[in-house]
Length: 415
Length: 72
Image 1 (tube, rainbow over the protein chains, first blue to last red):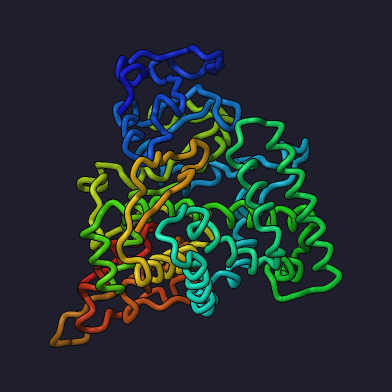
Image 2: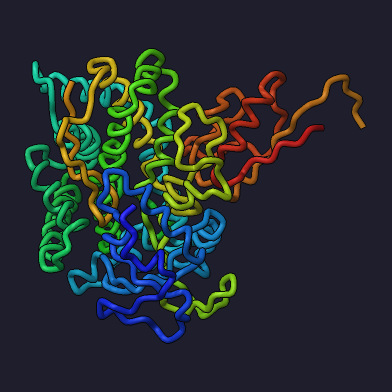
């Protein structure tokens, strides 16, 4: 932990950095925590993140960060459950705010909608990634995993992220969307800039590129429907109500940002763990049937998703005065490592039986792609271990995490 | 009152709060069935004999706490 200079240890509330703390935030709940204070660039950022347990369970971080404004953080499983299960008090409106980058106002659908319209969209979209549909994709995932492993040839090393962790889920997703495979790198570049770039100008540019590309794709499928997800969305009936152009764009934009990043990021942490835990890795290699439970435990311990909600009216929330328009940040990894809920939460028990983790979220916005994500991880791990059972992180490699949306920048492996 | 020799475990599921995580079916496939979209299919049913422990693990692994198990 590199927290000696941070205000976590001194207990002082900080006001430096030019950030503005709203009047209704009491000094005793106000902190200015930068990603550096929390060592979020570590190879395992989930460990230093535990420092926030020393703070009040609800506190205000005035560090403007990715969204350019301060926000409340809730750090316990119970509080996050309350926030994520009560959309009438804690709304999903504008929680990602990509259209604002373009000076526009259309939501990601259904991510930035609340019930009942959100529920209607979820019902309409449920068939596209249902368990039985995903079951039908398993063979394709297995074939692709082996193609990627074939491509390594006689090499005894690779960057896991670029050779396997990213192309496996991204190729599957692009096929699903009917996106041209030769543009894979372009899409990943846009995605990276949109989600991880600090420079707002580059993010705006990336948002514009994605929007133009998707609008063209949508128009093309409108003229010539195919069997892909975009065509499905165009034909879908949402509780008898028409789907507007903005809503179609909102669905496609959401699928684009969700489909290119999340599984790859999770796979990075999982393979870093496997590379550094020989005994556990050998056990999974010897008995494939242990992989699903292991994946659940790895998802719990390395939960990458951080989401937020918008406060809908002034209220007292467990003794804290919240104001309409405030945002509450929910780092799901904090719920999944809450010592009130889990014994020894930072230790991994790959055979853990009861594992009600919330890595895919909680409440009405549960990740739509969770069935597919799980299948990709199960198969991705099993096929790799069959071909490369013993591997390590390359000596001298500096493994670091990104600060906006957790994920490893690279993971050099040798075998 | 129906007289029975055996004790049964009953699963009571709140379908209104099921969000389709699918953990129950993955952990106890002989106990819990999902509908075509991946949401829990039935409100209430008896857990098959011998499946009680699997049912407990599945119910305890549901992030939404949909499933309540009661001994009849």
